Length: 515
Image 1 (cartoon, rainbow, N blue to C red):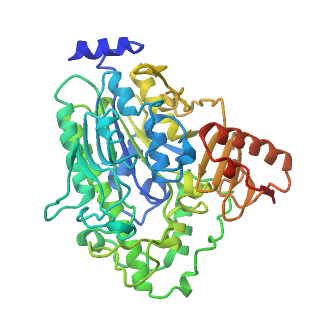
Image 2: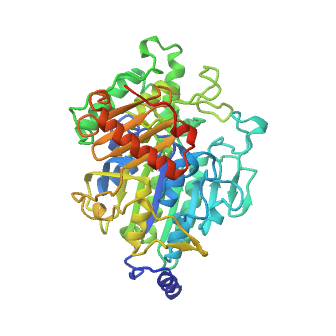
């Protein structure tokens, strides 16, 4: 098997490296989690000892970005490319791009996914069709955590979800089922299977938690009873202070005022219900952390931990959506109800940043990123390197000593748009330069970051805002009126990128009023 892997690597132009030197890769992603929802990024109010241990043993990024939305983030994470078609539609993977499952399998890796896919539920868009040797999980966006067969009330026509293993669809789930536990069970099985031979492996574990519906086990919810009685405003300030203390946030950045959707805690009705929403959400993250502990224990038992790169991140900022409306009759916790946290708690979960999922403000696109790799990463480090999910596939290939092919099955591939962050992983003081700015688009919201300058457009406001990310990453001082030339320069870069990636002509030509 080892000689076959090396032969495969040579055929695709791999820079040779001994199998024993190539790291295993364990990529863990949570869904709709706020920037400060884990202890090592400021949340002393949620118990995340296993994630915090990853940070203590590894490296934390202060400035890492996703695409602000489940589908577009997953498309870019998998491919090292920005989403095409303007991010419209679920099936964003085409035959001019490889997933990291396909690319790493060609480099001699075993590949597996256990969790949320959300890039197509039917052939040829399933994980099994796109490079994963083993696959289990939810091919859609969200489902009931206790019984994924229960229809999703958000969708007309029944709202049944696609859940599968390999090519088989799963429609029945046993008593005692809980989604986060099940994803981890299957990930551990894959890890144990992959560890039986010399080939390195890439294992992708994208949890659905804490995406709505917010549902958790009673024993986990009980841990947080009364923990959030002082409300979302106090939570935002407390987490901000802790992030400053940890060295993740500059104390000179002003703490932003509440977003327009946030009501004062003092004016909130039904405060017990409001507290329960946050208690259940915290319990969901707690359960993720427990399962990460189980997975790390299995990794240690396998003997592969020393040379395994473990990454942890979120697919976007916390979610302010309220499907079905914000009603107190939707009880957070049990499987019978379809509840959500709402914008006021989401505002605090993204502390110290503004806005939420789908926005190109930092609250929508900033994610924690933790990297642990005992044989290569020094413990306890932090980096100011600006990174993006398009950088992960180039980093994986670099670590494996492999190159991305120019064509696949006689079809030309788009060149990767991310950069390798391997030098930063090996030395947290290193900096990797980027040849082009970073760009974003989703549902009318736009963004571009070039060095310290960030230009954003929120569809609801229909105007550009300009921020200095070094002096004001919390985006409290809009400089667009003072620097119209910089606005025009960055807006032109965004327009050129949008035309390249397939954002609709109508969207590109929307009237742009500079504040």
